[in-house]
Image (cartoon, rainbow, N blue to C red):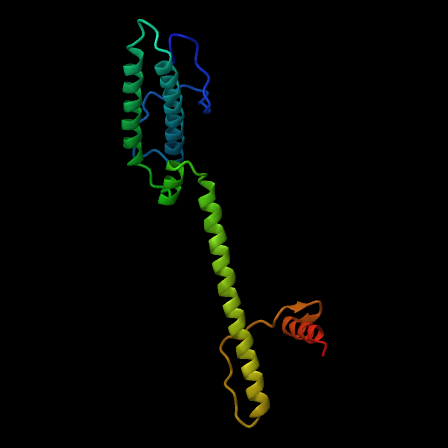
Amino acid sequence: MSLNQPHLPSPAATPDGPLPSNTTAQPEQSQYDLCQSIETKLLNLTQDLYELEICAGEVVEGQQQRIPDFLKRINESFVELEGMSKSLTESVPRQVIENVDTYHNPHMYTKNSLSRATGENQYALGRVLGLESFRRQLYDALATDFPTIPLPERRHQPSPPEPVNGINGVKVEREAMNGANGS
């Protein structure tokens, strides 16, 4: 990984310690250790790619062999990473990989997924609360208009609606509507 010259600075963070001599994943190796090995290998690969870019940009007479050496090391790193990937049980959503490939922030996938899930949950909660409100109004209307008909007991008794400023949410809406109409 190092050149004959001093170590070149890299835009990517590089590991502090040397790589372990055996970087291939073994079945008894824990997933955490495997992820650490893969991360170290990826950081070293990033450094090699950066040094290859500099070396290819500044070819000096007598050092033409350095580029094929870098390419060989990079190919070996890819082969080792491929071998390690077979032991990894964690998965990454395909959309995250596509975002990285198209130079988009992969955290946007998480943010969008959470936003979508939150919106769907709020929509479902609204439907449930709307149905429950309708069910209560229907039950009250049937009990008021047909007092002689026995109404069945519900298996599940919902919790009463949350008071808003000491008043039930439905009454607040009706009062707000009446106030807006001038009634």
